[in-house]
Length: 532
Image (cartoon, rainbow, N blue to C red; front, top):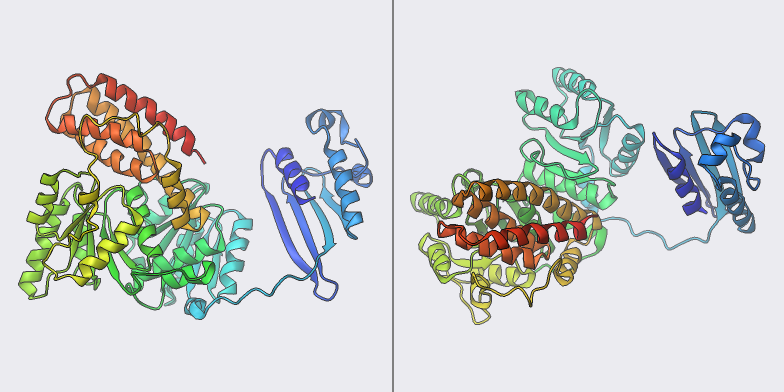
């Protein structure tokens, strides 16, 4: 019945929204009341009494457009009656229609209360900025359940005014959750205004959007992809508060994960990892793996940011991407070692993360002061083992155990590697592993969305660089796209990009037109298979 009402509602709504709500009607009688509201479609009053009659419709134009509507409603009415319930319609023509029905359902098992971690959210002050009142109400209800104090604003200008007024009265918000799509001033514009005002330098910002928005990391602490589930909201708030209050404080992302999905084996429980990675897609995959292993994670998106965060984050170990714009991983490692020497601190284990797997690349990492080496794409079990091995070893001794690091077990960097055994498209085993690690489907969808956006931009960069025969730029774009492609199971695309990268590294692109063309074809296959 609900599927029929919702599918009809979506079909009939050209503008506006469809809202589904369920409330407990009576604990004693075990009834549930469900409503489906269509915000932009009304039913004329003279047809209200016959809308549930077979083939009754609101005029010939409506008959042509919405053929079959009343038949579905008639069937729904009959099913509800057989379940002992009643279905009704409340409507204002050209405004809205609300279909309601009640059914008697057996009581389920009592929901286990969430741990006391949500107690840490009590009295947190949150500003919700969204022009959609339904979204406002939805977020407000979830946050109120956790004891969060919320104020609702419907526009960017209203939010700025309220923030100013609150600051003048000595009241500060801890967090603002901002929708991306709003009239007059969108979410990014609002965030930019907030970031420029020193009064709000402590205000954490989370963006809500239906798709991943690129180039917003500088404005926002987290990005949530709609629809927003309860676990996603809780996890993002805790991640943000971790950044604001310092990792290991009262807001624990691991606790949020345990609260919503149940505990799993956390072999890195209590370990603080400084993750240094500039590629947002790779960053999100590594972050997800580390949290699933139980680690607390501090993220730095550049070498410069890592140097800034290192003295204060109390990290036990560093995962260092090697190729980053500005200060690369080798230079950043050198800076960390110099800081340790100057302060007299023992050396922290540093594990290289790179898509290059040649012996000379391994040696370059060790020569720069790193302790170990993992090749991309990161293998989940190997990541945990490598971190544990390095934490147990002497800080300045590389951990090359019998099982080996990714360098010992994986060498797929030969330019002449054959693609026949890899196969085109997506390796669904890799994708399945990523999905299992994510646990929450919305996080998995966010990672895929991030990859698709970044891959599109990198393909454009690669095309421009290749057409102009700019070998350094070809190498850079191919390298970045290679590692993120392999993370989502696009092995053939990753191998083609590696072949191009290695040729560009030799400062020649001669006889590479076939490979470049194959990259374009393979990218289209990957993108079409990953579309959500």
